[in-house]
Amino acid sequence: MTSISPRKEPQAPATLITTPAAILQETQTLIQRARQEQDKILQNIQPSIATFGNVLLPLAHIENAVALRTGILTLYEDVPTNSSLTSASCEARKIIDEFDAETARHQGLYELVRAVWQKNEELDPESHYLLEKIYRRFLGNGLHVRDEVHQARLKEIDGRIREVKMETQRNRKAEHGSLWFTLQELEGAPDDLLSALQTGQGDNEGKVELFFSNSDHTDIISYVRSGEIRKRFSIAGSNKYSENEALLKELVVLRDEAARIRGYPIHAAFRLEDRMAKNPETVDSFLDALRSRLAVKGREELEDLKRVKQTDLESRG
Image (cartoon, rainbow, N blue to C red; front, side, top):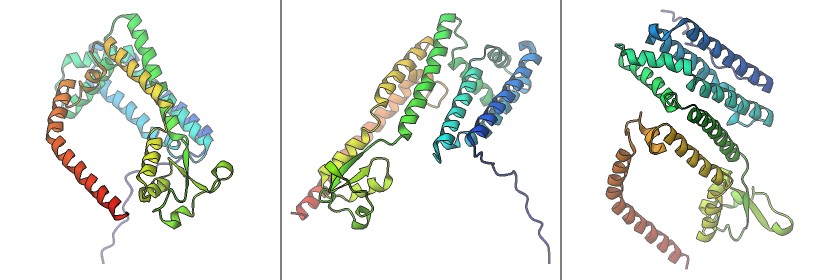
């Protein structure tokens, strides 16, 4: 009988960090090491001798090392076991994001990457893609903008955009309300689901509470016969992040200003430049063609749904 030796795992499983202090300590250590590796490149390599191998490859290794631990360090942002761990993960995210922004705006690293780009080395497709990606990232952050006032404003805008994004995420993760309904209003929902709901007191006596963020509660609404009740819950739930409205408006204005400083007419032109579509005109053309092909079918399906609903209403008398 042939014996089979046990297979060895390709790598050890990730180790979770279970204390806020450990999360912040590892984050600081991770970023410190990354900065040290960047400093080695800056100290040892001049633009005249810069190549893919001595600039881009080390930068990619640094980025990979940070990315490898980022998911673990920021895990508790999305797995809120307790507030202390969540706060620590949010702070870790902030530290890592600030390091990424600092790297993407580093003039010395940009000069080295630009030197490699201009040398037009013969590279395999994957390496060329990496070079172009990192080079365009520097351009996207305005390193080619020579005006110091514009440079300072871009840095300020990018910092505020990061703050706005984090604030909107915090708002989304917070509990955002509920509505109270009588059992009569929820007619049609299964009794076993309704019996598990919290009952109200005072002004809400005789009612049950449905939370927008609870998937079980949104399932209950899908059984409710009253179209008005379903509509009321749906609209209220869709507006539960009203505090993000002002943040979204601010974000649109900031992105537009940043795009114009970088030399683009609109933010979409900046974002699409290194993607398959390349420009907003291509996207608009595609969407127009798609709309013309789908609009007729969409109206037909809408009429079918209306007939189904009308039949259901008539069956109830």
